[in-house]
Amino acid sequence: MKKVVLAYSGGLDTSVCIPLLREHYGYDEVIAVMVDVGQPEADIKEAKARAEKMSDRHKLIDAREEFVRDYIFRLIKANGNYEGYVLGTAIARPLIAQKVVEVAIEERADAVAHGCTGKGNDQLRFDAVFRTTDFDVIAPMRELDLTREEERKYAQEHGVSFESEKRWSVDENIWSRSIEGSELEEPSFVPPEEIFQWTASVANAPEAAEIIKIGFKQGVPVSLDGTNIDGVSLIKKLNEIGGKHGVGRTDIIEDRVLGFKARETYEHPAATILLVAHRDLEQLVLTRNELRFKAFVDNTWSELVYQGLVMDPLYDSLNAFVDKTQERVNGSVYVKLEKGTARVVGRESPDELYSKDVSFDVKQEQKGAEGFSMYHGFQSRLAGRSRIVTKNKKGGKEK
Ligand code: ARG
Image (cartoon, rainbow, N blue to C red; front, side):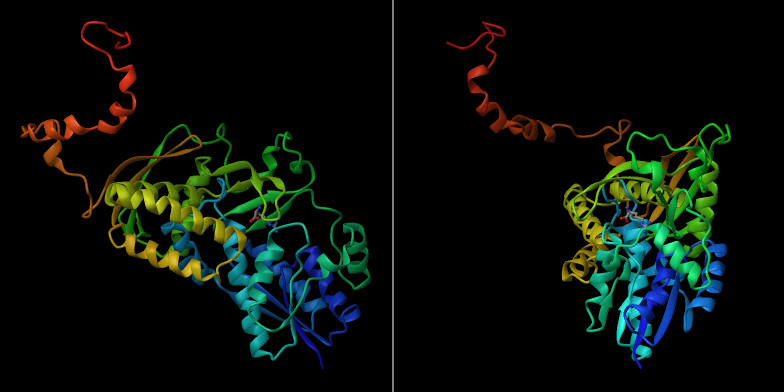
């Protein structure tokens, strides 16, 4: 009795994997695992119905809270951003893969499987987690190279029909929504308004701006307009408010792990707001040295997450550093939402490194700065010795 546990989304690729795992790979039992990281409810319902029809058994795991607590909060603390992408799909894959592995252990399965193709990043992210175990790893879509048409026909033969080609390929979780495929692959193609579902266009955003206040504790957002709120609810709420104002659209050329460039479109109102607010608060409470070093850490963190390498020991080390810096990231940030933009318009913190002692309005002993100023740029001047301006020959070269 050979058993395989499949990461199941309900889409065409993963649905086709179910009969393939039986007929082509010879498994007797296919267990479909759906992991809820905040996909639309309708998608999950549809996936459940399909899994019921096609698989031997299926499981739905609600991982939304864990996703936000263990992954999104970390991302905020590390200002997660890869080439302008807020890492929505990337950060969800390791958790989904981990849940599949947990079921495989429980079920004493022989193998784990995913439906990713050999072109994208997701295969790497699934494989990386799967291969921390000794389960066989199967990726039918990557191995068999079927066309969409062949897939649809094959699904039909197994009692499940898929409407003929959806125009866009969408991946969605609570943090972001990615829209890819068909004409969008062409970098010069201007996306029609219909691809966006979370965000209003700037034209349709209200004229009136709105200022919201986000409270942070140790780098984690914990309140909205002075009221404490859990992470899942906060992100949902900010997606709504920000989306209404047209905040959080990205259209970029992205360097995939395998090396090729891809045109990507995303929407992510809550991510935009929280990242801009968090970054601003850090600027108020961290030292210049910390900020400079942390920018490098953040960047490395983001690259690891993009590659799905959260099992690399470096990931833990970076998180340990980040957590240490976040001890002082407490306070509130005021963000103004207006016609497609989220701008910080104020901030406050009990840990601020801002000092009123150097304010314009305070009489202050300035003499001390004189010595500092005298040596400021000493090396720079020496290096430019030959171009020095003399009193006699203004602008001329000293002979
Ligand atoms: N380019 C993004 C990434 O690599 C989004 C990919 C969307 N994935 C998908 N299966 N539709 O994370």
